[in-house]
Length: 223
Image (cartoon, rainbow, N blue to C red; front, side, top):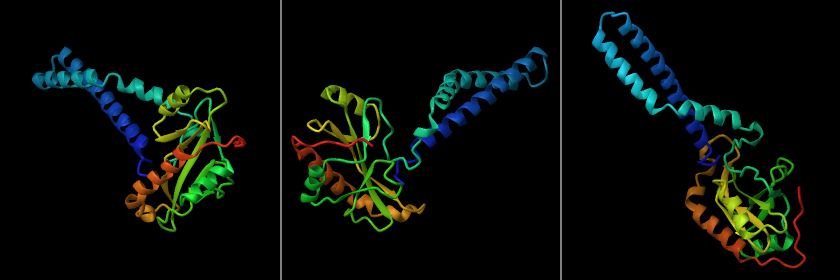
């Protein structure tokens, strides 16, 4: 599991916590207002509670609405449990096959790419087979192809729309996402070696992808 796997989970938890505090403060403000209207004891405490509650409600007034919109807009089929694979983007096709000449180009530069077959290839992922980060850790990347006629500007704009770092090969109309480490078990120690080798592996892979020149007969098979 990559280190970024829990990013959205923490944000969601924080939003729920703030929403709960918002709800409590609304209730507290209402109770304090009723207490003042009835002229009950502890008037100063009620005034202080009313002021503090109103300030909290005003400061976080937009959080509940934002949280509801996020929860309503989430598509369960697009949630990435591992946190590594990029989400689908409109106008592009995730590919499980890349040109053989590109695979050979990687190999000539010391990078052995192997198609992920553990799940029948349905995730269109590739494994850096010689990353040497431990037997329980996979270094994973994936590719997306753009339709013919897509401008370079449009391709880059679509890639910027997601947070997963990527590299574009304009000649191929193909983008490669930066590799990430994924443990084969739930033990966080599966990919301990990745942190010390990640810069070298990522740099080597990106350099090879940038230097590849598309051949005239290169084609990509859609999934």
